[in-house]
Length: 350
Image (cartoon, rainbow, N blue to C red; front, side, top):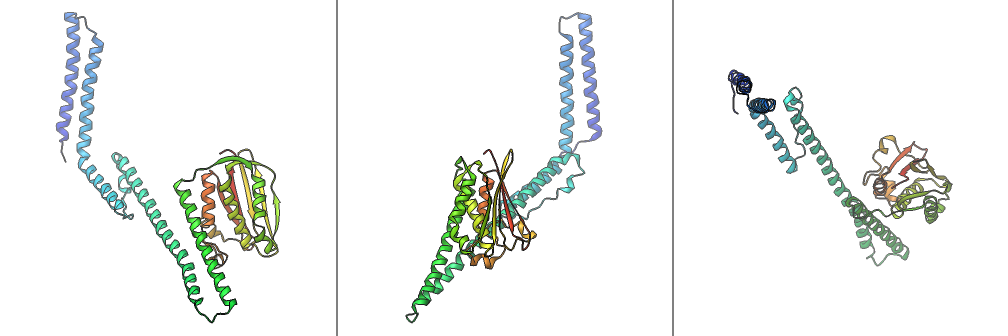
C-alpha cells in the first residue's frame, strides 16, 4: 500500500493553485501590454480546466492510494467466497455489515450482498436437486420392488387361477405407475427446458372444460359424483393441449378426493383483463400449512392414500408450470372437511 503524507499533499495542492493564478495573471498582462490578438477568455478557461483536472486527479489518487490496500483485502474476501461457491460450497458467506459505516465501500457492501444471495439461491437449487433425485429413486424403486416380488410369486406352480390373476393385476398396476411417472418426468423436463413452445390459439374454454369432464366420466360415475357447472361460453388465447393437461390434473385430483355421492363444482368468471376457472371438490380439504407446498414436485398431502390412488406428486407441479408459462397464476383455498378450491387465473391476451 502506497502511503502519502497529508501535509506534503496539501503543500502540492497550494503550489498548483498558485501556478493557476500566476498563469492567469500572466495571460492578462500579455494581453494588455502586447495587445496580442488571441481569444483571451478561451485560453484562460482552458488553462483553468487543465489545472483543475490535475487537482481532481491528485485528489482521486490520494483516495485510491489511501484505501488501496483495504480494497484489495476486501476483493480477496469476495474472490475467496466465489471460489468456494464454484467448488460447491454454498455455505460461503461474506460479512456485509462491516461496510455499512464506510461511505467509500457502498459498492463492496452491494457486491457482498449479491454474492451471498447467489450462494443462497444456488444452495436451495442444490437441495432441490438432491430431493428430486431422492424422490425419483423412491418412486421408481417402490413399484419395481412390488413387480419383482409378485413376479417371483407367479413362479409357484401351485397358485390358483384367482391368485395368478390378482398378482398379474398388481404387476399391471405398478407398470402403469412407472409409465405415468416416466411420462410426467418427460413433460416436466420439456417444460423446464423450454423445448416445447406454446401453440397459442383462440378457442372456447367452456367447451374444453365440458369435454374433459365427459372424458373423465368413468372416474366420477363410479363414485356417483354430481357436477354443478357454471361455465358461460368464453374464448381464451392459450395452448389448448397444455391447458387440457391442467384441467385433467385438477379434475382428476378432485374426483379422487371427493367422497362417494358428493358434488364437484366447476365455474368460469371473467373481467376485462383475466379469466378465472374455479374447480372445487367436496373432499377432506388441505391444511393451511400444507397449501404453500402442494405445488412442489413429489409433495403429497396424504402420501399413503395418494399412492394408493396412483399419484406420484407431479401432477400439480406440472399444472403450475403450465399456468406460469401462460403468465397466469394458480392458488388453492381450503378448509378441513370442507373441500378444496383450485383457482386458475389466466390473462385474456397471451
